[in-house]
Length: 366
Image (cartoon, rainbow, N blue to C red):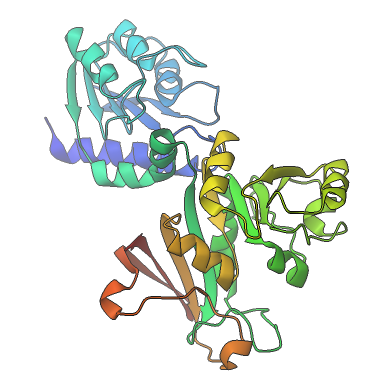
């Protein structure tokens, strides 16, 4: 075993997988590198749900020369027939001698069976190389496959005093160009983008992805308990992406019919007066929305965070102070805790300087 070379090839496989984020839907992102006699003979990435897996693309590139080779795979090869045949069998058929796997697949249909299948055929299998990076890369897939609920990333940009806008409602722009570019990449990498109806009324956003290289537009999700969304809102009229409005049984049936006629999908979650957010996540998961970028105002951000429905927090801070007291909306608006020791904290912190902005991200823990 050559640890240095193994890490190099696995890192390359992870790099390839990372570039496919946002393209595979509820499927994982996976990369594969096939190496023989010190030379790479096959590279592959899973590009889209229902199409060939990373191992298949890499072995196709190897063109029958994989006998005795080593395959580096970022996720355990599948062992079952789904939309495509099992990759473990393809590795066996091609005569691969050694398989290095970054992490096991938590999918109950796999869950170690792919590794067992390879070992039973005499293939040397090593598991765990760069595991933490591989798990982070597929955190959305892992959450969805284990819970059938979407992985929620809360993104917000604020001033140093935690304001989303001035007391007059002006918010353009808090963050700089670098931060806004990252936001569009985040949109591309999530299946849905969620806001509250107040954001739609105040800003009339399109909620689309704007990147130099065209990205995918996520499903637009609006939390609107009483269907106050205007029928001429951009998310209603703009057909570049589907729109889902999550509402309650108390909402106006006439307005509901009008939205349906406009092509908006309605999801009912709770009797009212507020949307039952936990039930909403279950409903959205049933629609195979496996990841959501939450770009809410303080009320929705606070409610989602307090309900334990946020899996990752990404906060952009600009070197600005606007004051305004309660008239200037803040990032989080919820009743709050009585003691500092009860505060929601972020673990696994990552800090990035973006020009004059700072990005802080982590996993919320209560």
